[in-house]
Amino acid sequence: MSTKQPDVDAATRRAALGDLREYLRIVTERGELEEVHGADPTLEMGALYELSLEKLYPPVLHFKNMKGVDPDFSVLTNVRFARTLVGNLDLEAVRTLKNTTRWASDPVPPEEVNTGPILDNVAEGDEVDLLRFPAAQWKEGDGGRYIGTECLVINRDPDTGFVNIGTYRNMVVNRNTLAVFIEPGKHGDIIRKKYWARGDPCPMVICVGQAPVLGNVAGTTSRYGVSEYDMAGARIGRAIKVVRGRLTDLPIPADAEVAFEGFMPTVDEESAHEGPFGEWPGYYASDIRNETVLRVGATYHRDKPILIGQPPARPTLPGRQPSITALASLWNALEAAGVPGVTGVWKMPGAGGSAMSFMNVVSVKQMHAGHAKMAGMVAAGCAPGAYMTRVVIVVDDDIDVQNPAEVMWALATRWDPKTQTDIVDGCWTGYIDPYLPPDKRARDDLTTPRVIIYAVRPWHWKDDFPRVNAVSRDYADAVRRKWAAKLPFLTAPQRG
Ligand SMILES: Cc1cc2nc3c(=O)[nH]c(=O)nc-3n(C[C@H](O)[C@H](O)[C@H](O)COP(=O)(O)O)c2cc1C
Ligand SMILES: [Mn+2]
Image (cartoon, rainbow, N blue to C red; front, side, top):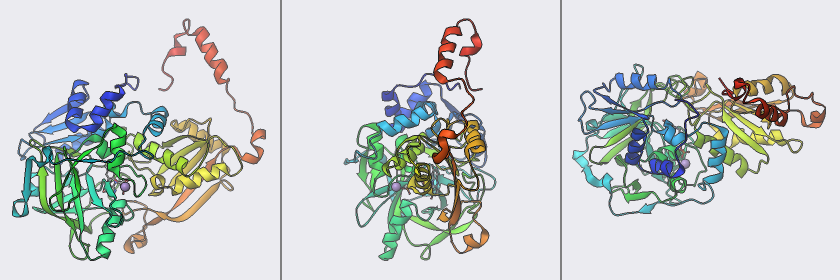
């Protein structure tokens, strides 16, 4: 699919973001969906999914009539990556989202309603049976069936009432138990520890099928204390409707497809083997551990529920697009910290999954001594940039951060490795970091170093820095206009 294809209008995009079934209708109409009938949830679905990632905009795969699965249940993959939702993958899209989403400053809280389709089928107590729901074994190396991959893990801060939503993977253990992997330091982890400190299990709800916007915000890091429900509402311009869970009172999206509700005790009280699971850095790093579990006391699902499946895959696959939402969040964090003159942020291709990345690039229009350093340190330390990022590269505003060759050019020519590099140790990482050394892993020391590279013209002699060898932009544009009709190469696509 060409990147030049016309975009959908904003209203259509909001409609698709806000409702999974409306999304399904729109992507079907736009030819972005493939129905797959009869695939085997053991390995075959995972292989088809990984093959789909050979495309930058992978087809949305709707798995129906899966082998050995109740035909009323289906699984949808690549929801977040459809062109309908993403639009053009460029800096303009990031800037627009940063400037037009009011989600950081002007949240839209959820609206409580009495009922909704999620309550169509409710099972409690002994009737709970997680084995009824399709859960794929995505890859040969996976140690279980992962039902929650692009899921919502919902819990509530007992001190402030703030409701968090994070995407944290979960594996089916038995009829009423899920193993849930939440990296230490994620908001869902901070919250559960508050319950545990009081001697209580943590109330929790997990949705595995929901409006695309909810999956999008759940996988994006923002500020602790800002509810992802409010951000999702702001993004689509209307409140997310929620019903109260029967056991926990937690808000559950009223039109979610499937939700599991229960309590999570400490790992010492109850645990299950979780993993190995193929992770976004491209490895099986967290291996197999005793992990925390959700004791599921109630299940909810719509009629003919559509589950969302989105297992991680190697970051070198074209379909691992950088997330525009995550980039906007990083840019927002830089501005919220007061860094002036930021002109772009990007994630280096090959160095990350969609929401997370090992290598972030920030461009700044330098305004004063120490400015580039300010940008680099905030990018390395702010919430959307802190977890597991290995390298931060700061470049000047004339560098196109989206073009790896330009970033390499800045590194090659504007970086003094000896004086323009900060190496900071002891930064936040997780079990899925492949370079977490075995001894640190053994003692749960989840920290690794960062390098911040200032590939910018040195402030104190920037005016003496050699001039760039290029025809000036304005003159080049004027010449292109003058000769375009006679010389077709002038109007051919710029990037090949
Ligand atoms: C598809 C997907 C899967 C993810 N899986 C996990 C996971 O298993 N465990 C985890 O700690 N973070 C996982 N993440 C990252 C978190 O969702 C992300 O850090 C998010 O910001 C967490 O929400 P929080 O900031 O409210 O903690 C995943 C992200 C995505 C997009
Ligand atoms: Mn959060």
